[in-house]
Image 1 (tube, rainbow over the protein chains, first blue to last red):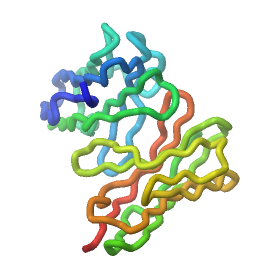
Image 2 (image 1 turned 90 degrees about the vertical axis):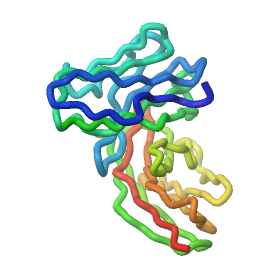
Image 3 (image 1 turned 180 degrees about the horizontal axis):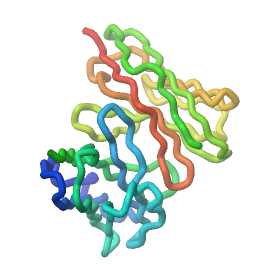
Length: 114
Length: 112
């Protein structure tokens, strides 16, 4: 696609529920990143994929968070047993090969846990 | 530790005037890139300007320019001839390896 697409745009879920957030990167981009932006803060790194593999998952806050990219394109961020503190905007970005500065961000998914 | 500090939570400027947004950072890395991103209400992070740390010359993109002081670890953004469409959150960031490190942002309002 022309840009990075994230769905849904907004998601409201109850505490304790499971959610999946989807990122569709720019076609041909091998590198994909997930960031979390809490209210009033800048984005914080969660995980980086190069192809199908998670090259760096050091930003995932705990084992309730997991992400996959099975075919090297679309990625899904999965959050189990959601907590109110998980409420944030989850941003996805992609780049051609992870080098240089050609990163394109999506518009994010705003997750609200009630 | 990698940190980015934006000490101005909010700023305003009259249309057509010039404004400077401040940013300092801390890293022990030698190779990194510096960025300014704009985030309008649509939430998408839009690249405004970037600077390679090894380049001494300050980057310029039309009305946007930076003042990069490597020794002081300072990377300010100057917006000239401010336009109403420049109203947004502005984030300073640097990238080393696979990660971006962002500041907490400056909310800029351009007043007509």
